[in-house]
Image (tube, rainbow, N blue to C red; front, side, top):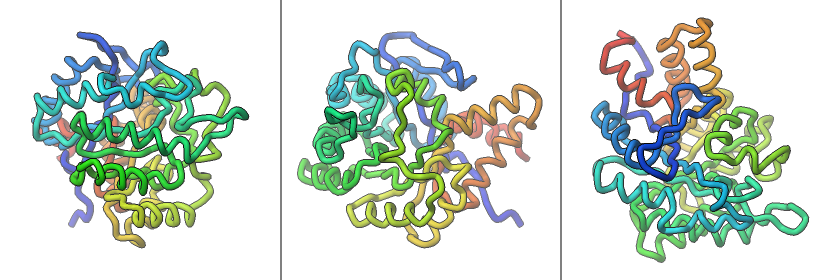
Length: 313
C-alpha cells in the first residue's frame, strides 16, 4: 500500500574535498561530515558505491592562499576538483560524478560571481569564467556539471560551450530554484566561503524565499536554454516548489537537502529530541513524495547502509 519508495539509487552524496594526503577534517557545524583528501575520499566512495549510491557531488575547500578576486583557481586543471574527478574516474569507473559550477569557494570575497568596483555582481562577465570552469570540469571527467551560481543565462552559454567543445554527453544539472536561504550556513563554513562573505548576502542573485511563481519562470528558462535536470534548493522548506516544478513542467527534478537541514536533524538526533534513522527517512521520503527524482543529502551513505541492514523494516 505504500505510495512512495526510497532506495539508495535515489540518493546523491555531497562531499567536501581538501588538498593533501590522509587528511580528514570534521566540519564543526555538521557533525558526522568530514572534509577529505582525495585518497580518503576514494575509500569512502568505494564503500558508498557498493551500497548502491550511484553518484557523488564534489565541493572543494580551497586553501585561502589560492583564492582571488576573480576566482581563477576554479578553472585550474590541476585544482582540487579536477584532480579528484580524474582519480575517481579511474578508481570507481561506474560512479556518476557531479561537479559544481560556481565561484564562491574560489573567490576572496565569497560571492558566486565577479564583482564590479561598487561591489555589484557582474552577471555577463561571470558567465565568461563559468564557461572556463565548466570546460575544465568536463575535461577532467565530470559526467554532470551543476551551475549553482544563479547568474542569468548561464545554462545557455554553458550548453553552447560544451557542445562546441565536443562534450555532447555532459549533463547540465541546473540549480533552477536556488533560494537565498538561511539554511546554507554550515556549507559555507565547510567550503570556507563564510569568512570571505562576511556580513554580505546573495539576495541580489538568489531567489526570494517568498516566491513560487518565479521558480517556475526560472525553471522554464533553464529548460529552454538546455538544462537536462532541474534542482530545487533547499529541499525541506521548498516541498511545494518541488511539487510544482515536477508536476507543471514534467522535467527531471532533483532536490538538495542542504547543510542547515542536516545540522538541525543531526542536532535533534544527538540530543535525543528525534528518533534517529526514522526522522532522517521521513524527511527524505517527504522530498521524494513531493516529486523529487533524486535527492542530494549528506545522509546518503548512512541511509543506504540503514536500508541494507533493514533498519527501516
